[in-house]
Length: 359
Image (cartoon, rainbow, N blue to C red; front, side):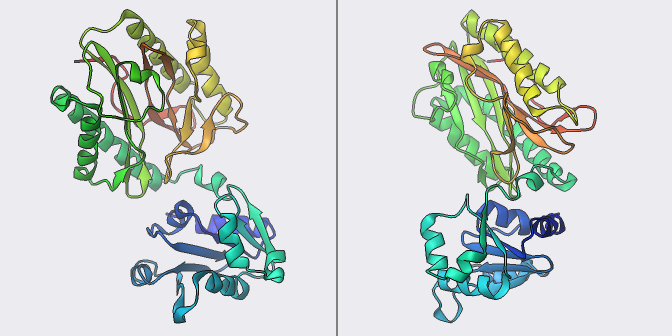
């Protein structure tokens, strides 16, 4: 499933002999092996996976087609060993993830080796364009994660009257994620009751679940290394007519944006489609974030669905569509689906209805 040959081709196209990967997300993307301390040196023909003694045996067992190297062998300091490996395996031109590497780590690895430093070239987002286009296998994993998230949301609604506080709802979400085979949240779930729903990235608290108020739930799970992301706003009891009104506007914005999705469309057109609907009804100033973001092994990936984006939609991009309206001191509405770009339309992975949900 990992696109190793495509990555090796890009390394060659950039005029590099090798690339040094350090970010946990990219290391996982290329190996499907989880480690808190692992590195990759990828050359045009070879693949080197470098990790410490905690993961070494597991990596050797799982990564049969990789050269697995024990980091810090013979009591070597890990930065010294990495410098030795870069000199031995990296060749004359070595790329590295400058957007993922701290200055401190860089200094420890280079440690005054001027010849190595001359051979290093930093890159930002080196795999972004590759990770942005999902394989069908990746899409199927995300689809399963979304299906499980929809199921968790349904279970939460059935129990909402008994959960009492925002944090109790989040705790139950986490429990159900593990019951569904997930490995954790893809981000800390947002459970925002009443006027808290007007804060797009509210931090869930012990605040009570209020009745005759909106309840915004934004949650996701990690499943087989991939993320889901989901938001719905629920009506608990009798709701302020303006909240009901903005719900219908946000729903229209979501549907309108989704209808724009197909291969070849500029990414910014998706954001503008949603934004124009909200502006049409006079609520433009209350839509304060981008319309969506890519999703994969990380919760936020390329493409960013924003009005100034320069990308063009390509088949098998996967991203969220999540317009919202947030009125301070009153409440907010956000409705989020995950979609896949297909040749002629969007494939909507989220199955929970966009229609108002009242309890």
